[in-house]
Length: 296
Ligand SMILES: C[S@@+](CC[C@H](N)C(=O)[O-])C[C@H]1O[C@@H](n2cnc3c(N)ncnc32)[C@H](O)[C@@H]1O
Image 1 (cartoon, rainbow, N blue to C red):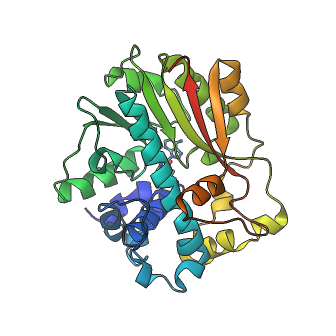
Image 2 (tube, rainbow, N blue to C red; image 1 turned 90 degrees about the vertical axis):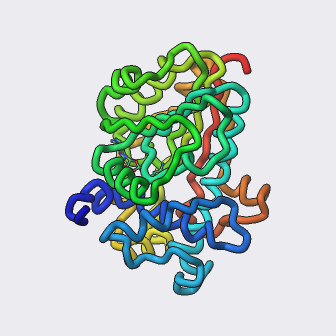
Image 3 (tube, protein in one colour; image 1 turned 180 degrees about the horizontal axis):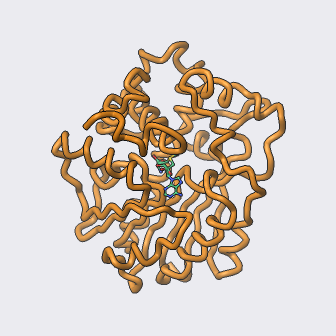
């Protein structure tokens, strides 16, 4: 398939899917890896935009001191592991459906050890899922669960697409919005939370990533953002939706969900690996939210 057809990952927010896949490829080859994704480097090499990006720690200029593939890369490695654990725990506790919102090049359906009968829905834009299918088919990859990709724009009404693909409203679901909400307009985030609540049976879980408040000019000029622009031409600040963010945690609590909010540094301490706080930190306002509906 020629690169020109990979429009889903070759520009705009689609490039961020390649960026996270690159971080997972590098993480996979670290001696102290927190997560392993053997498929990640194949995505990176298959797309023209990322073909020359590093896929191993030894290929990263300055190693861990590199703000993009070192520090932010470690962040993505930690996030992958924490959310792997969240999904597997939810599945073991009875969530037989997983919905990956903004799934990008996530290969959890292929690389995690799912309980029998697990169904995994992967929602993203058409071009991203088409590129993913092309690479995974080329590898003859076999999912470890029933996998159902759904090409739909999450800014619109996506509930019907999910339900018509077989989603069961009567059983608990584990939902994940990993690296997604920052790119959505506030109205789309509110609708997404409303839809997740409406489609969730008691016992469902949801994990998502948000940024609190507005980042100062010093943070916006910090090494993670500057290096991402300079090294791979991705301007994260331009891709993030600039509108004031909705209070999705408060929204969920108001609908009877219990919530726990963590900084990434909480998990870096727990695992003994991952980014530590630094001055004017682009990661300081990031929060990982874990929510449960009803009794578990
Ligand atoms: C930073 S990537 C994260 C991908 C994946 N969750 C991961 O962590 O590897 C963001 C993903 O959200 C998807 N996305 C952004 N806006 C979207 C929208 N309006 N509808 C569907 N997908 C969207 C992008 O295509 C991209 O794959």
